[in-house]
Length: 375
Image (cartoon, rainbow, N blue to C red; front, side, top):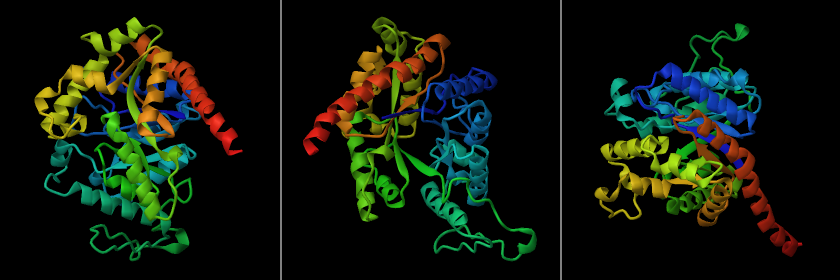
């Protein structure tokens, strides 16, 4: 099982962006030093607690500060920008990163972003679908492109102005051919969008917002999409994000993760719950759709959505998660605000050096009898 990192990022709004952006950069650089496979970074325009407004720009500052980690938009909000710009920028980033790039995509769900862009009344899911079709067509075709899909508002061509002898009218292909890995974040239980991801060979990242009981539904739908495409789903392509804190002793882990009033985990889940209730999307936190919103409080959230403890306890929790959800290829560690930098760094370090070796040793041990029986 691989280890990745995800950050919204989410910080108290009163903290200076110059400080929190550097803190987030430090988290990715530490993850790179510890051998994390990838780091997904989100973006929003109009939420002060979420400091990254363009994940490409943020990640570009890390290309030459890291050596092996794959840098992933987590996600690029495709409804916000013309697909020609996204295709050109993503291809350029892929070249700058020499292929250490993962293209994470989504429609962009924040209503205030849409209002600021003058598109509040538009169907952002439809915009997203039209945009990704156009982006892929740009990467697949040669100039002058002549992209004109029925029902798609984006008509892309350079036919009238192209000058082939000086290569005017032509865009970069990505460094990774035919395209970078494309990852979609999946939040809703039983999401039908995951079927389409399977059909198109986009890979799912199940969000840390989702109760673990619903995770298996993502894999089932992804597998169905793969079947429709005449392919077999590979568990290596499925990522699951979780909110995790690891400490050297259980008392510290309990205090920092769930008990301390200043805990970044309490802050994160208090704010996330408030945001989801305001947007009427809190159903993702419920054990049952009929469950009343009043039952959702911070203790409920921490109990169900935070994995905390010593390395052995956290490893056991991840293995239990694997039993519940089924096999998956990558556990994605959700990075929090660094209220206590020492503890935050130590948690990331323990996750890589203590937790994952335990997890992978247990997986290997459980697979060995199966392999012997098959032989």
